[in-house]
Image 1 (spheres, helix red, strand yellow):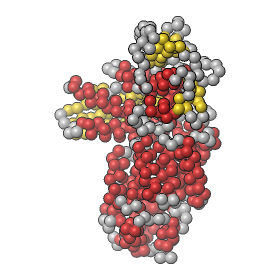
Image 2: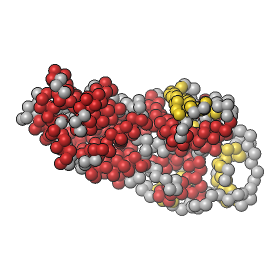
Image 3: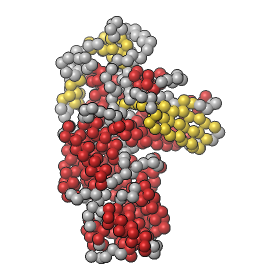
Image 4: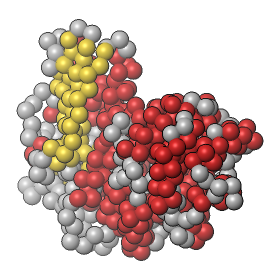
Length: 533
C-alpha cells in the first residue's frame, strides 16, 4: 500500500492524519501532534484507506511489517494503543471495530482533503492522561562521548537497531525512531519524556571509542519514577564494528525482554487483569526452576486464562509450564499435565498461527511426547518469530541430541550463554554442555559443566544424576553416591531407583545416541550404586 501523498489529509472526529503523523484538535481549535509509533501510524493509515471496509489481519500485517516475520500479538498491541488515543472521551464504542477471527474496520466518518493546511506545532502535546501501555518504551538516541564526531554513526546505529529489536518483543510498544530522535543532543528528563510520549520506560546510553576499544553503556529507566532498573557496560575490540553493533544490541534486547517483564510484574495493581497475570507468570519463569516456583507460575497463568479464556499468550505459557513440570520431573500428575498442555497448544496455534509463543508451546508438547523430529521445526519457527526467546535454545538442543545431531548441541548452548550470560536458566545450558561431554567420554570436562549447573540451580534432580554418573566414572565413589541420593530426594517419582525404571521414563533418541548413553551415563550410574532392576 502506498504512503500518503504530499498534501493528502484525512479528518475524522477531533483528529487529522497526514504524512507527518497524527494530530488532535485542542481546546483552542489548533491541531497539535499526538505521539504514536511508526507501526501505529501505518496501521491507522491502512484502516482509514479502506473507507470503512473490513481489512483482514493478514493484509494489515503484510502492509505494516512487509517482508518481516512477526507475531500476531504485535498487531493487537498496536490496535490497543490506537484505541487508547482515538477513543478517549468517545461515546458509542471504539472507532476501530474488531471482526472476530477476521480483522478490523474503521468505523468513524472520515473526510479526505487534497489540500495541505499548514501545521507548525512548537511542542509535543501531552494528549493522553490514561496510564501508559504495559511494556511501552522509547530508545533515546545514544550519546557519542568520543572526541571523534565521525563516531556519531555508530551511536545512531545502536539506537536504530535497538528500536527495531525491542519492537520484536511480544507485547511491546516502542516509540518510532523519528520521534525518539527529536530528543537527540538535548538534556532530557526521563519522567518528562515518559509524559510526552506516553511510555513507561526509557532506554538511554552512550558510546566512547578510544583507538581499537569501544565502551557502550546502557541504562533502563522507569519513566514514571525516574528509577534506574537495569544497567550494563560493554567493553569490546572494534575489529568488526558491524558484528560488535549486532552483539551489543542483541545482548541489550535479550536482557530487556526479561527486565521489562519483571518491572511490569512488580508494579502494584489493585485489580489485576489477564495481562497482569501473564506478566507475573512470565516474571516467575525467570526464577530458578523448582517445584514450588513451577506450581506458582502455573497458578498465575491459570488465573490469566480464567479472566481471558481466548488469550493465546495465556494458553501458550500455561502449556509450556505444564510440560516443563513434566520434563523437569517435578509433578505427580505427568499424564494429566501433558494432556492438558497438548489441548492448550492446539487451541493457541489454531487461533494464532503466526504466534511464536504458540509454536513454542506446540514444540514443548512434541518434545515431551518424544517426537523430537517434529518438535525441531516448531522450535525453529518460535525463534524465527522471536529470536530473543532464548529459552527455546535449551529444548532445541536436546531435540538435536536425541535425533543424532550431537555436534550441533554445544554451539547452540554456547550461543545462548554468550547472548545472556546472567540468564536465570543458565543451569540448563551448562548441564546440556556437560551431557554432550559425558556422552563423548570427556568426563573431566563434563564434571566441570555439571558442577557449574549445580551451583547455578541445585534443585534440578537431573543435574545430580549426571554428576553421580560422571563422578563414578572417575572413581569418585563417595561423591557419586551422595549425588545419586540427592537426585532421588529431589525427584518427583521413582525414576532413579533402577536403570530399568530410568530407561522406562525417557526416550533417549536414535540408536547411536542410545549406545552413547549406555556406554557412559548408565555405566556411571551402575558404578554409583544404581541397581539394574
